[in-house]
Length: 96
Image (cartoon, rainbow, N blue to C red; front, side, top):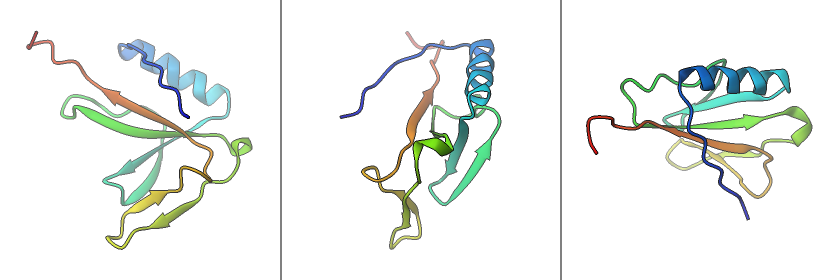
């Protein structure tokens, strides 16, 4: 069973978090619209997005098992893939 941890980060915290990941050999992948994997060096800009989903991976975790769905989307086998799922979201400071 997975475990969730919540981090509240500003832009400077995000930069330190990404630097920490890279220093420990962790790759950051973004699956844009579930169609293509892209390795990125930063977390996405949240100016126009409310949420994003990233995958954290290090080679010594093991292999990533993926398949393509009937709709042509990429799907990860969560039972055979060794990844950490990372979601980001932003806070709407105008609504309380």
